[in-house]
Image 1: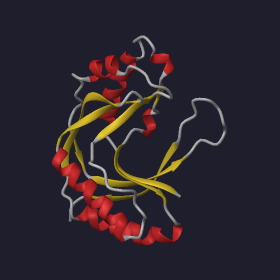
Image 2 (image 1 turned 45 degrees about the horizontal axis):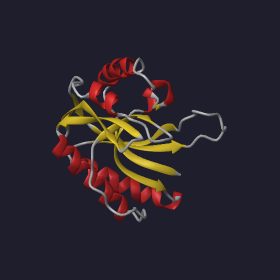
Image 3 (image 1 turned 120 degrees about the horizontal axis):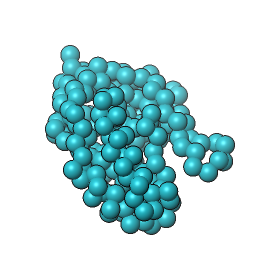
Length: 187
């Protein structure tokens, strides 16, 4: 099962981001981008990859413990940026230090549960809004997103999400996400 741990944004923040992203569709070249599905918007904490079913009970236990050791915190979606010339994202503001700690705890929980994690990378909190299959100038989109700021919300839950990759071969089809576990933050 292909899994990742995430924070799911509040519906109000999703609606506000959706309105901002809708405006991006009017920019030149927008039809050449693959826009992510709003129902799947999330802030990834740790990508776990393919996880053996035998590891899931230990993973659930460890993630529950990581969540208990993390107090709820405020967060909002904020700004815009790119990863190279292929990924457009909005970032996070507010409780970013707490979000980073939750990401670290999540990654450590997965390792302790026996999930083979890729090499550690510096955590950059973001929510991907579009991708390009080829190099594209995404700077105008990032610039349009730069002033964006959603209403703050309280992060109260750590979610484990299954990524169901496209299998139909239909161009533009995207992964479908299914929450397979969630744990409240705090004791």
